[in-house]
Image 1 (cartoon, rainbow, N blue to C red):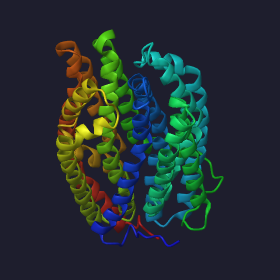
Image 2: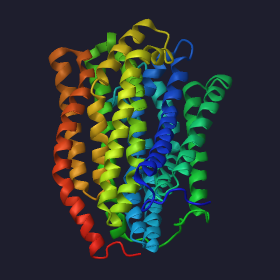
Image 3: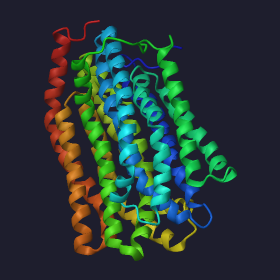
Image 4: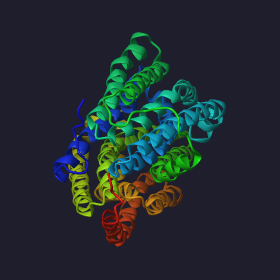
Length: 460
């Protein structure tokens, strides 16, 4: 198979599109992993709304587990792309080998840890007596398949960073399509309910894992997965590079856990489960925005990292403009969708008129600042791609800090429903801070990039 993208020589605009669109679509399809589960679960006769709230409590925990794949995959793939840009393919392979071992160790450790602590975690994180049985069933089965989920997600980044964005998309689409097909079989035909949704998801992740490892072991890729060359300094640098995207995702999960807990507390016995059900639907809708946008920004990181390693600042500047422009255009479209089609989206989850009305209103509150979010996402991710990990980490944590403060203060001052304004407040504040820091640092980064080329840093 011929690699379709030359990261150092192809025209930047079509190159960014070829990388961004497949990864955006792949992430959009991957959203269906959770959304389709929730849609089917919400429509289980008699127990749908309660079961949906239980699975909603699991959602942030599942995402937290998955964030460890990004710690390694998004930490190692920019480093690998830089080594490829410098023409150092042996070092590129060594980075990938170390990441593979890291993912195996993390998968085993996390599986044991979460299986031992899941009961207490679910009660801490918003499960009520009514929703706990459904949450426990789903999380137990899902956690048992964590090994395959982490390897599939983490190693897929090493296909994309070699220019195989199409294969990266195929990895995600394989699992998502299989999940869509298996869900109704296990949930309704075999009458397994919530357990069936979790089993379908795990089987889909096994298929994705087998596919991505098969591609990385084949002769079709320039840098093949191997075994050996393990070294703690390499792993440490990968973890340092991946810390920012890991914390972005992991803290998002933690904040959503806090959100569910706060809604349960301030909603009380009368309204708590209803608000958690609505929050599950709102979070599912937000994933339709953030996951594709994250796919665009993370999928195009190899362009920035490769050309930084190759010492080509002009290509970096052009790529940054295109990436931010794509994110803004996508968010503008989603704003229109929010104000026209969100009632249809909510009806997929529930026939309950009260939940429908509440959820539509909460979605509009939660997403009213997605245009600033469309600036925050690419600037943080491309800051990481340029090696400025500490700055990216600060910008990420700043947004989380604002979100956390809003989650804790708004319901205390204005009641439970005010909690749904926490997202737009955090989006607006973080976009302003991130833009200021990025524009101040960019000239120094580009100067450093030019110096790399003049001093032979991109020698092949």
